[in-house]
Image (cartoon, rainbow, N blue to C red; front, side):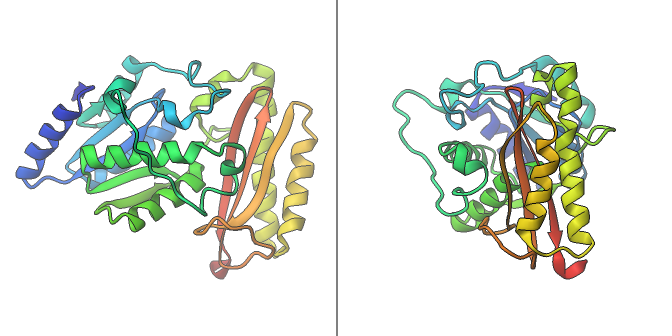
Length: 284
């Protein structure tokens, strides 16, 4: 497996692969890889001849008061995981390589970015859309892989690909959880032992809400209120949002009908964590 920070070298390598008729998968990440990322790489390796993993802590998706500087990084550990998973190339650029002096073009989406994380992180998805667009143009993959834990991000990227006519198949991959239910996240490393235990309230509330819907509850506010009550019982937890939205348009719903995303963001101490469940009411 190779590792490079050069846009030109990535393009050269991908062109060589495509001349050989090989398919290319892309797994975009910010590094500090865990089993959730590995599940994306595993699927990409299974479905493509070659796999590129991008590792880039994207500065333009962080607000000034967020954790850009403290975001965990370990490129050597990441390289080992990618090698063992069968990836072909790591693209690990510097901010200067991705955003050279004078950079002034951004990709901004309306509508799908207004709810959930977009409410409290209003600049976040502009940064995500911009960097993912750049990665798509640099790597030109046949398929790209994203985790369903970031469900709003996944919906936004699917919409962006459709709107901008990217010839790329977007693959959503299931949430990977710890044995006790906590969704795997690079930010879990911020948690103290006490906070790590308190963080279980996220998966507990998700399980509660999902069971209510599966048992026949269709009033969204009833489900949301029950989940909020569950989370609020944990002293270390502070709710950012609990919301039910149409899973494709990310617009709030009053009644569970069709394809619905129920998503939460909760601060455990100073660490913001997210989780969700998606149900297709027509298949229940």
